[in-house]
Image (cartoon, rainbow, N blue to C red):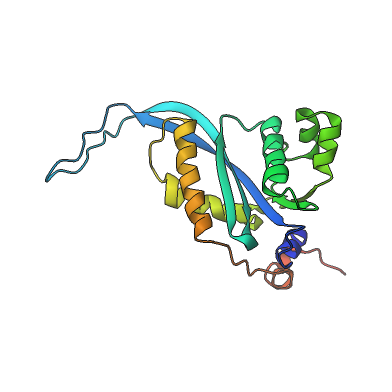
Length: 208
């Protein structure tokens, strides 16, 4: 916990940005029957029955101090999928950074070994040298600022909408994160190690 909080307390350094990532499953849904369009004096009518169109995973990355985030849906969330997103992050979003400090949960796919499963050893090593991993503790996902962004995404974009396929979902995700980035919506994280040692004292070992 203190490792992550210490990262959040650091000033922004473009050469060593702090980025948070998370992912969530997403159910793809279509209409079982076509909605009846809105007419004068009558709102659009949508049947309560829906058709399952499969599932996908939404990956989200955010640099809180820069007010930047990007979300993308992929059909799966394998080690190779995660590794592909890391290559994109390092080579396309932060090509000039010395390294990126990445905060995530300790999912088995979130590991340097995933890079070696996806890429030749020299490429995996090149990427690994620029990736500084920091994991939230067990039951400590609230420490991951990417979860705040996922909550905003759910409330502002997904809601209870029916989105039938990955392409349509990615169009919605792109519109959402582009708007948020234009508005420079950031997260003002206030919780510090000093506060944690007081408010979460019970989590610390007792020294006799």
